[in-house]
Image (tube, rainbow, N blue to C red):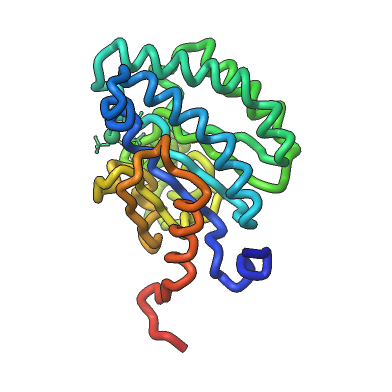
Length: 237
Ligand code: IPE
Ligand code: IPE
Ligand code: MG
């Protein structure tokens, strides 16, 4: 598919993926869950390449939710270590794709050295313009809305609050709403991802576990999206 397809609205400008099924992928192979997370993170570099080739401009992935702190400490610590390792090892390759790395979520609870690395990765890739690669770590849609409200209150906002006011206080106000949200591994829910921003997103669900998601799976999702008729509450002209 070409850039023309993107211009025709046949390709999402913003593709969002809920990376689910790492644990099940590992269990099926008799491996510990963290091996599934490792395989899942490895997948991202390939996806950045494929997504860029499709002419998508914004690619966001849900990698750790505000609710994922409820998992056993061993899994959470392991995930934080994998994030550290992944960022350190992959920033240059992602930069070489022309992708700008951005993180989206709350800073609290994240280990300080990981936060430092996240800021470094953002700084290192800030001039790349082909693709925004957005890693949602410690992200929750409700948290984002509450943080925006509290930021406005702190500024002394007198109200009434408009949608634009709220948006301006979101984590990444310049990023357009996701056109397509893909969730892997068969679960049919949003799990607190892009809560406000998904009001008119198209959804695509696949049973494939995230570490097995590949070019064919991506193409299937995009072909399905290209057939959708988006109306935004209006009538087709
Ligand atoms: C998704 O995989 C990654 C994270 C939520 C961190 P899961 O860990 O949710 O995998 P399943 O759902 O248990 O298979
Ligand atoms: C959603 O997956 C969060 C991420 C993919 C980061 P979960 O596996 O945590 O979601 P639930 O618990 O099945 O809703
Ligand atoms: Mg899951």
